[in-house]
Amino acid sequence: MCRNIRVLNNFEPAATPDEIEAAAIQFVRKVSGFTKPSQVNQEAFDRAIAEITATTTTLLDSLVTNAPPKDRAVEAAKARARAAKRYGDPRPAAGGDVAAA
Image 1: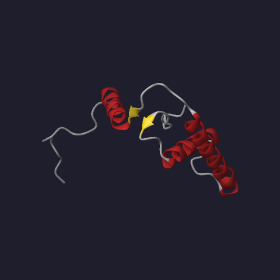
Image 2 (image 1 turned 45 degrees about the horizontal axis):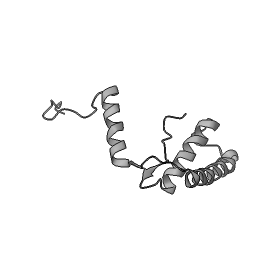
Image 3 (image 1 turned 60 degrees about the vertical axis):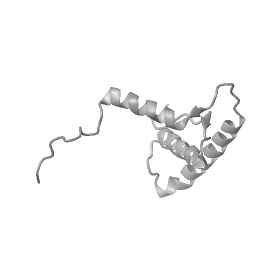
């Protein structure tokens, strides 16, 4: 699965249309191999994004789960903690040396 496509199901608040479309764009980019299609392929690219967005919206509206909805803020904090553990904290330490210009 593409690293940039995130789980959209069972969150409170629910996934927004913009989030669903962003996932569709990432999917089409991955499958097509194009970040930005040529003019001749733009219509097919846009049509695929629209169809996948609609299908994903239908899917998310149809899914049923007994699990309690996940909190976006809590899940984002967990992701930041995993990233910090994996890559180290990208923020400089307070009072760190700054090179003079």
